[in-house]
Image (cartoon, rainbow, N blue to C red; front, side):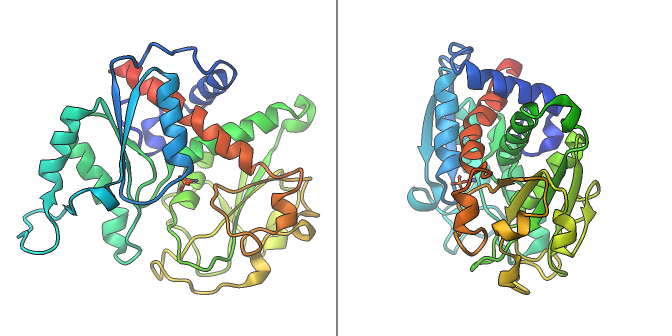
Length: 322
Ligand code: CP
């Protein structure tokens, strides 16, 4: 594996999931692989889970990791080709990325979308410029349109749950991605990425439900059935992934915020006793009710825990390829 910025960087999802689950049972199985290697974690935006889980993963592999909060501590970066830098930006990515490539063996980057300029966000110009100029493998810690480490952890979590179901009952698993209300306009990254990974994984029936106007970019949803009636979508679901996203068509906008779309125990009564997922952080009693998050069917803590094994499996692959 050279870079990890989308599911397209993964040759086969199942062996990566199996490797992650092996690390979960034996975290230090490859504790010498990363000795003498340094991981850089660059944050242009905040994080709790991604930052800490990736550092733990690196430590389990014997790597040193250094976090740099570019948004707070770094020079303001310029990404435009040919920019006349007489404004607020101080350093061009063409100059900064090769320097970072000298310091680190692998570079991880978190960079959120603007939600103002769809063309620019969907070109992934920031993470692609790190790939172009750093000269070392790049791992996405969430980019303008995708969150692949989250999606890998999500598939790991689903696989773990499915493995606990008797084989006779585990055929025909149904996963539903359900839009939820939120107070802020959020990126489409988690939803895009989850749709992309579940589609590529191909081991489940996949339904996406959202109010009209919240259609995702169909480049990511080719393998999903879109059902606008949430109740119909939820029927017989085994997994319900709840997530807000802002509009793709009317880019970055909250076009409706119907509180009736919040996931509650009453809603999931028509599912197949579905397990409930969310990437966190979550707005309690806006996206999901307390009763669900605090209930036995919630996988959210397990999902966040699995971020370590997802990151470790990816770093392991990259280190083995170097
Ligand atoms: N789910 C996730 O990426 O969490 P953080 O934003 O806290 O890293």
